[in-house]
Image 1 (tube, rainbow, N blue to C red):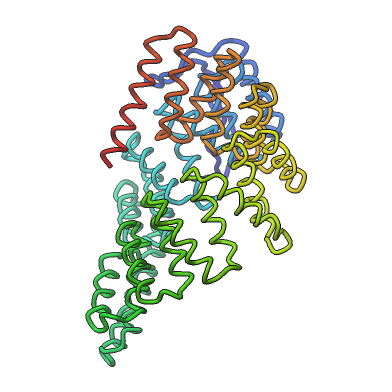
Image 2: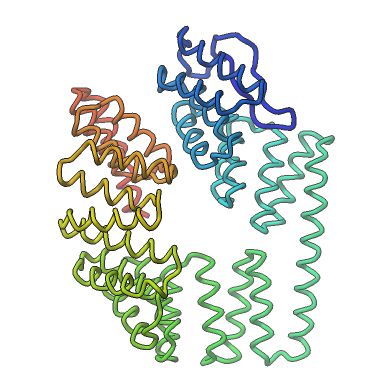
Length: 483
């Protein structure tokens, strides 16, 4: 099967016209009609006409939705067209269909880096490395990603491994030189700050600056150690607690972060920002009652804070206090002249979501339509519209708006899952399976997507497939409960 290669300096070119899949690829033989469209896509790509190539590959995918290479070819054409998010969704689906498809991992990782999702890029490159552990270029990709994350020592290790595999890899050599330079600079700054502390070891502010340097390097244990030195010098000092909270936040230690902010508000009960942070971390802990109390304190101290009111409304929704959420969103929309455009869109989306949660679907539709009038192609506008139509049994309208939401935000797994569920309702089972599997490809931990897939299989009488999907959902649920 002809295919478009990974993007590179030479552009796109097809491989040989051999239609037999590589050994162990797990791909089914290509039918003649699909091959015809694949050939057309490759011909268009050779001419630099990626729009025509994408159309051709879309036909190939429609003929063989479970062909990973067809999905890959389409994603690659979309990547060249600059449709990064759509391409990412395509690569994720291709990998889901064929976990051995190395090129898809490489392109996906590069795209993640391009849009700033460096952690996702790193995870993707490391998965690719499991398939091809002797690939020096993959180690370069990993090193580059570590550099973007300011993890220069990790970058050094990756570049060294690339050079062990290929001593002539110039990109690895250049990356190693750059990473080493940055490490030397960081160490110089740390030494200078240590000398400043030596000059006045009783000044907590100087320790705070050193802790910040360690945080920049993601050396959390050292940052925590320095912060504890601050606390030893001034046990009741606000600066030490502020730094401690910052360290725990960057470490993702939710309980310690929440406890630290609780200490801060007891020390400074008039600090609205500290109350807001406490609310955030209580919410992350799942303690919605305490989060709401913290946000209410923050609003009492700073009634004009928009961010706190958004957080409060979202927490009311989580706590199923829908009338309270409704009041906050209506208040925010009433101050539309003070809101940035993104905030105004979020307020309308939140209001529509609240109306849907209350079962007031006509009002949800009106609100979502108003959102789309103000901000055309807003994905949450389409999604809330689809949710309301779905609840009213207007499935054609729901499907259309779920698809619009996906087109506007192709990386949202929930959109695919809800579309799959509605397609199941109207017995469009093959499309429903594809949408559910796309949801899983976008978020393999989305338990509800496996449950949706199980329901689809049950409706089709595919009992074993349904049991397998439900077993995956139960395994994920058990793992989540343990963690």
